[in-house]
Each structure stands twice: as structure tokens, then as C-alpha cells.
Image (cartoon, rainbow, N blue to C red; front, side):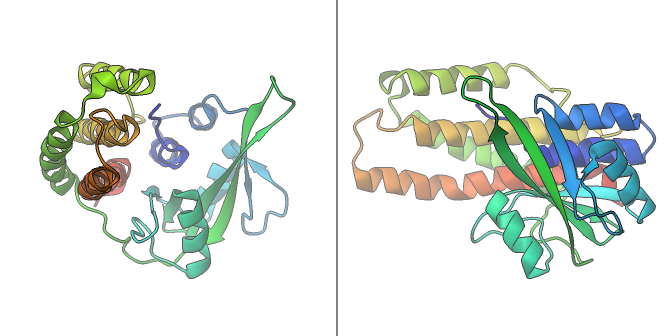
Length: 257
């Protein structure tokens, strides 16, 4: 099931908090969501792990004027600007938050804890220095929206070649999820203060990402060969990259300018 990255929630609600549009407790609650607990370690001059409410306030006092998202994968350091230690952690997690103005970034470490049958998720955000420089490969909202329109056409074309109906319950569930999302319209996916265009871009990016996921997991549908599957994956790689770039642009929209 496609879900929003935790870094996106932290950036969106952190930006709303900095803008004075939500309370610290409401921002922290929205970021934690269904997780059991979030803590932040490594805050400058703060040796103990901090809760989100305290950590967001501390980051503001250290000069943070906004939060951006990074969604890197090997070969594509999307949203990162260094140094290597931060980039490596973010690459391993495939997500991170970068502050604007404080020279700090946050990388989540997610763990399922507790006995079998009663497990819950806890998140530790590692606070590390980041380089104050333009992030890698982040488009504007307008660029992202134009790229997504083409990506959606390409993903749909690839998917249309699959015999999805014959590929099993996993693919059927994924297709149902895509259809539900496609007809849901704009979601309240971002915190208060974000422009409607950012909501639209994030929604479309999610739809494209879900199509890519469907095309990859529906698998063998039409009994394709290994070579055909590899060619499909190669064709979808730039589509998936476009969706990630658009997500980063949407989450960073409130910091533009």
C-alpha cells in the first residue's frame, strides 16, 4: 500500500508550525500518525533524546525557517546537498528532511518493537549537519506538474500491456487501490499553508508511483519473459524518478521563494 514518507509529514507539518498555522502539539501528532513514538537524537547542545514538539522548537531556535524533503535512491541523490555522512544515511533510509537556514538535517530510523502480535513502530530521527547549498535535482512545482503529465501517459501505456486481471490477488488489490486514488480527487495530503497546486502535484505523483508499483508487482500477468520484465522495469525507471522529484517539489512548495 502506498503511503506518504515520514519525511514528507515532518516537513509539511513542520512548515505549517513555523508559519504559525498549527500548534506544536497538533504538528507533532500529525507527524507521528499511527506510529507509537518519534524521538530526535543529536540535536546541538541537547544530549538527551527529544520529543518532536521540543525538537521542532529547538530547530526553530537554531535558525530553521523551513523544511525540505529528500527522497534519494542509489544513483539519484534527490534533494541532497552533502556532506557525505548525511548523504549516506539518507541514501540508506531513502528519505530525509533538510532544514532551511539551520544547517541541519534529519534522517529517520524506523523499527518495529514489542512482542509478536503486539508490535508497534517507533522512529528515531538522527539530526546531522548538512551543507547549505541548493538541493540536487529538485524541480519547481510547474516543472513537476508538466513532467508528471507525460509520466502518467508513459506509465499507463506500460501498464496496458499487462494482463493484470490474470496476475493474482496482489495485483488486483493494487489495481483497486489505484482506481480508488484516481477517482478520489485532491486529498488533504499536505498541512495548512500549502498551495492547492502542491496538493494537486502530490496527488498526481502518488498516482504515478502507484502505477509503477502496480506494473512491477503485478508481475507476470501475460506470461512475459525475463527479458521483457527487465525491459519493462527499465522503461518505468524514469517514470518512478519523475514521481519522486514531484513529491519533493510538492513538500517543498511552502518554502519556495
